[in-house]
Length: 311
Image (tube, rainbow, N blue to C red; front, side, top):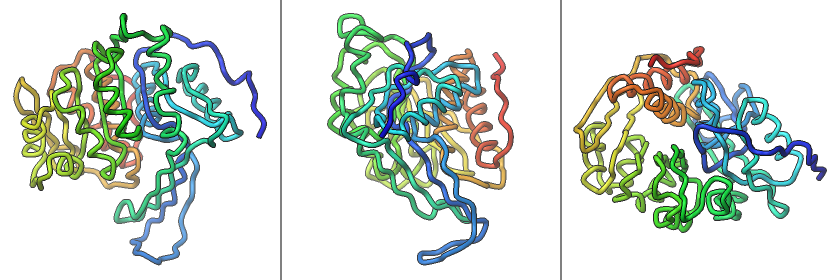
């Protein structure tokens, strides 16, 4: 496939690193209830996605400039995605481009009842492995002797081996690390981040249950359990029910705005990004959590989101 070198540019200043999946989301949606085997009318869209990219796109709406660390194929789909990201104000100069693997994709079906099924094809990202972290090692963003000190959003689409390596890497020793699983099926990949002092975990109640090996009735129970397991700080969402944040400063719980959900994919990423943006803007614990819940509610309701956070 053809490749246009002009789509790659020198890195520009950034506010935060977003590390993980950058891919194409192929989403089929129907307004009707759906069961296995159903064939229903609806809409199919292909849009930029992936956990790291979803977080980055939301951060730009709050006036931040994220830099992406990921892997894309040297193919037409990769070139187009680079161009889309650059047009949104995202820094793409640190992305690893693979000659051997195609650009990744995610496919989901959503109905009136929520997510029906999804398949994530992140094989190119997994194959690239530690190559996506080279800018943190070779001096462009940092090195072992002078680690990166800014905020970092990391997603669980990386392999367990690489996530385990990141925990021990001196290059991550001084950053403000925010970590989320890519899905409940990958939640247990976050276990290495227990007892990693500069890490905040963002999970939903199902993912918290998988991480702790226990069922929780409320987000407060889940957040407290994660803290007991060694998390430095944990934020747990539970759909339309109250969310919770647990840290050494105590336990905070807030109910999200009640809305009619029109889309699901990306809601957790929106919550995480909005919370990071609120804290970077100087908001304290309660208003930052409320900002995140409001942004996620607006997202699932498909309502316009504000581009600024009150300081």
